[in-house]
Amino acid sequence: MTWRALQFPWLLFSILMVVSGASAHPADISYLRVKVERQRLEMRFTFNLLTLTRFVQVDANGDNHIDKVELDAAESTLRHYLASHIQIRINDQPATLGNPAPLTCLWPSPEGPPHAPADDYGQRHVDFVFTQDVKPVLQDVWLGFDIWQQTGPLGTVEATYEQDDVRTQVPFSQGEPDYLYDTGYLVAGAPLAQGPFAHHPPAPWPLWTAGAILVALALAVVRWRTRH
Image (spheres, rainbow, N blue to C red):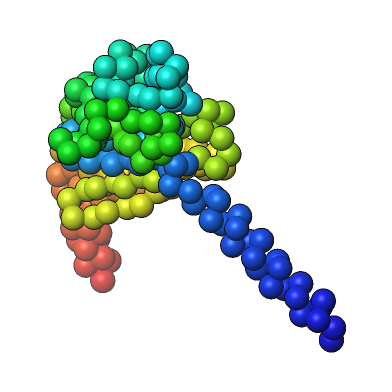
């Protein structure tokens, strides 16, 4: 076996590692926390500034710096983008993202600069929180993302569904852009099973039917005794 033949597997492995590392670049990753309760849904979307600049123009004066004032000015446009590009269905019915909370900027910190330079966009994050009440019960929630044209094919949204003490990790991507989460909650009084294969207990016989059978049995006994 030649050295070139031995070298090829290592070369292929190196290429795969580079591709894998590129696909996991933090700047391409957004985050979502979905808090599921019986009659309430909360969603917290976390995007870095680099991703937000791909959605809309945030740097209004074009100086390659974003400050809180520019971010606040772009907030309504950003919320409109999210509402237009993230579809949601609750209990198999079209719904909105919910009631927005004030935008939470995870920067600047008291010790940090009041603005973010372009080189730091990938490390500066912003939270968008939506909440809504669901009646009578939150049985399932479907989410679909249509943001990949802006994020690019390497963009992902790492979601965590929190229900009681259970955590479910769900990655959204261009190849897997949607997901249906079933809570397992049931409406009070609803049957546990539906459809043609559902099990239903047999209905009790009416009293008159039971009485008629007993009379028929008694007459049969009398006739048998008369003949014998």
